[in-house]
Length: 371
Image 1 (cartoon, one colour):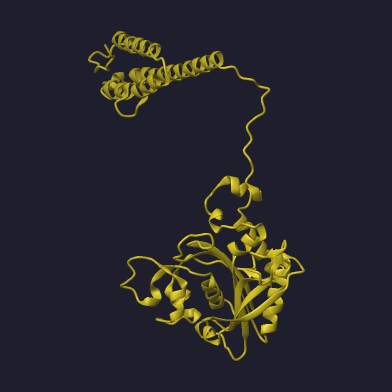
Image 2 (cartoon, rainbow, N blue to C red):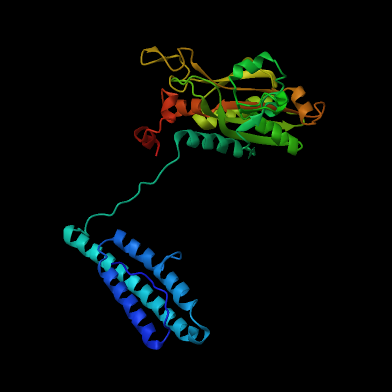
């Protein structure tokens, strides 16, 4: 029958010793019955639990109920019991550990000459590696790095970048909006940023010219995933604003950057395009790094440049004066240029990858090639 703590009616020395002896006998009996870790936990909680543990009941039923003239003797005995119980519980635990280790050693042979297990070191993801390379090129030109939130407002993502409400260029962004924003004014509605250009606006708001920044980061668009599209991708955008900045500065900067990324033999060319936040705007092509700009390779047309000898890589332009009005810059005194490039597009060219989805599938067999 399991031991239970009874309230003392006789607090004489002899009666107290009999009660203590009965408790210790029960303690040793229950400790001897423990045969595994689960039994030990039950045994520990039964004797040491703060609520309804044996020691707690001894304190309540013996010490607190003792008459004043007996409290000192009872208190000393209860303290001794506490030490004995704790020692027995710990000794039982040590016995369990020793028994487990012994059984394992007898059932398993351990060859200490075997090499240890080493965790393989990780490496940068190819997209992050490429993004860091791009940023490094512009840092060497004196640009600083700025980052911003991925969840943006309509104001920073569109309006302050010269995309007024109902502007047709908004449709090309394939924007992913946050649900439940209908009650807010349009400029305050939240969305997943479609480019890192909002970081340029935030930078100009807090900094007066001269400004030279690159803005790397993740962006989101409602694109169906295929070999060349992904709803999540990365961009590096740049901005330079100062006095007397011209389109020649833009061309020289990007020509140097492309040579730093793809080699000194690479050529660049610019042709007209349209972006709401730049005027004039241009798309930038580089001479094909696979066929050397010839358009042919291995006796046939080059598939990478579609036999044209050129590969379209990024967009750029002079900052539209309307944008300066949102950040309180004087467009009569300053000018600047902006550019933006997709990191995955450059990574595909640098590493010869034919499917953008490979960057996001998490297949270690693919990723470990870039370690």
